[in-house]
Amino acid sequence: VQLQASGGGLVQAGASLRLSCAASGLTFSSYVMGWFRRAPGKEREFVAAINWSGGSTYYAGSVKGRFTISRDNAKNTVYAQMNSLKSEDTAVYYCAAVRGLYDAPYYATRPWSYWGQGTQVTVSS
Image 1 (spheres, rainbow, N blue to C red):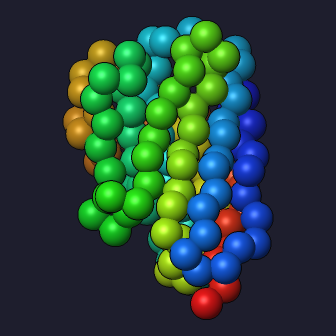
Image 2 (cartoon, one colour):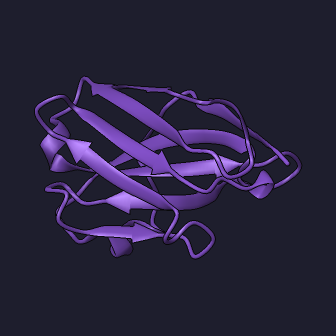
């Protein structure tokens, strides 16, 4: 299984970025997909998750209303649209996958099976 994240960069506060994660080696539509991040000096934290169909999503409180997770099962890709970026969003962002059919909130605190390599997002204030 490979998860290839892309789309990170350096932006100013208030700007937007769209992250993508292309998956291969798995039956994509059978997997819940998620985004996590690790800020400098901090532990990795959950950002967002989307269930297999895209009909259920869940967000960390710190990004709710600013970030949108979506997926395209025909392209084996999950996205994170990040708007109104803040300096505290600066982190390495990782996509992850776990097989399952439950709604997204169930997986926020559960173990994930596969991880991508990460893409750096830096927001300057």
